[in-house]
Structures are given as C-alpha cells and as structure tokens.
Image (tube, rainbow, N blue to C red; front, side, top):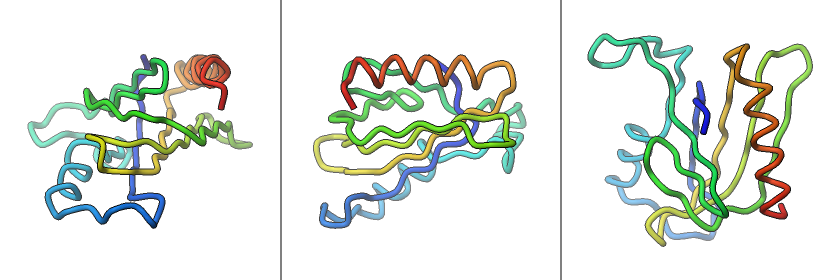
Length: 125
C-alpha cells in the first residue's frame, strides 16, 4: 500500500462502452485527485491523496477495486522526484479505464517504485 499524490483515470480503450454521467461523476469525485492542485479537501483538512493497494490483478484506488489489470507501465522521470504508474483495468465489470498514478513524496516515491516493480513482475506484465 502507498499514497498517490495524483490519480487520473479516463475511459479506455475507446471501443469500450461509454461511461454514464454518474460514472464520470464517480471517477471525478472518488478516483481522480491532484494533491498539489487541491492541497486542502472540502472539509479543510490536508489532502493526502489516494491510497493505492496492489494484489494479484487488482488495484484498489481509494477503497475501490479495479480488476483485470493489464498493460502496466512504470517510470521515474529524469529530474523529478516522483514515480509514475500507468495501467488499464475494469471497475464493476463494465467501466474500463486507463490510469495515471503519481507518487511525489520524496520519502515514498522510491519505496513505491520498488513495490510496484515487484508487483508488476509477479503479475507478469
């Protein structure tokens, strides 16, 4: 488990069913986040990002399980203290999405990178 400072999900692949307005609202409110742009949540507390858990072919984002994970990518950009994970997954057997997950906390991004790398190897992606 680790905390992601930024999570961005969008419908992908393009040939999957369109998301309903409620699906879009769910993703915008419960999944997508950028703690740098929104340093304080709606209640005035420090925005800590989203909790990410990895288990088998399931990624849990903020308590919501996304299954059938595939096409996992991982990078540490030059000149930035962060790691990035990209993947495709499905929620509720109908919402297909592509995710961009960023870990920017200086103390955590290398630990998260190593955790994701091990998980990716076990998953076989």
